[in-house]
Length: 69
Image: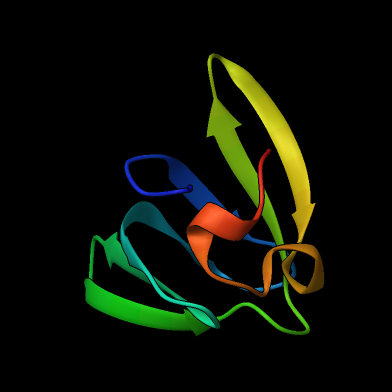
């Protein structure tokens, strides 16, 4: 589950805190407002426990409880 973690969308100028997650999207709270990002086809850098973890959106394109990071 990515809710609560800081996330950056690779290749795009978009980053923020994940405030909600569905099967195929992430809802980010950014400096410029709330943005919805599609998981499929995107790559992310997730900041967890002072580490940066690269995540392929296709690998987490499912309900949050169906995967484990």
